[in-house]
Length: 319
Ligand SMILES: [Zn+2]
Ligand SMILES: [Zn+2]
Image (cartoon, rainbow, N blue to C red; front, side):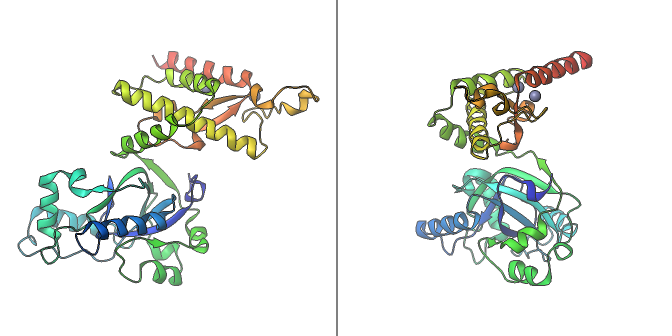
């Protein structure tokens, strides 16, 4: 998959020392609630519900005195050397941050502040947005081999406590970079948020039934009953959005064989949408990564049966 094929645009970039694995943090101007709120609002406006490109800075920070020779610091500095100046990942962040101490736990938060807090102000990176979807960029190219000099200067030529918004021209420069989905520890925060949205929307019963059938083929191993419920609701809600998009684009045909019901209806009172099934292409990935509209397809009933027969045959062969 390429960056240009993501379901939403990359709207901003973040410069970091090391890749974020389950959160990206921002440092507000002071420790007040007002400063935290302003920081949250700025980052949200910059993301505008799109993705964030992560860049590893050329330089690594100097820790507080006494930590220069700590094993953790040396290890992180070495890890940074391999990434310095490169484009490393694309993330989707949850729009509402959590206090960093809640994400990390008391002792890890204190360790981080002991090592990095500036001037005794222990709120560094304290506005932390959980990463709910993440992709690593293949070969992690040097940013200056992908972006022209002007874009490099505009995006990374100055320090910023928040994000750096991308313009169309920069999106075009990164569109062909190949990305691979990564498992994110905070995926359940994203699923739970969207399951709440799904709960409040009216998903047709037929859509839920078709998605339930697809998910029944995956065992959803290790999930609690509540997590299974959230996955089912969210997947059907996504499937419904997928169908609506296809109706809007006037692209109601079978993705496998091209069958277009409108060519057979001849003015009869039959809705073409009722003749096509929505199909979840990757039910096994639910709960592992945040699935998107790209995980669904529209199929005629014959192709749908055929695909499921193939899946069952593969399962028998590997059993
Ligand atoms: Zn078909
Ligand atoms: Zn199916």
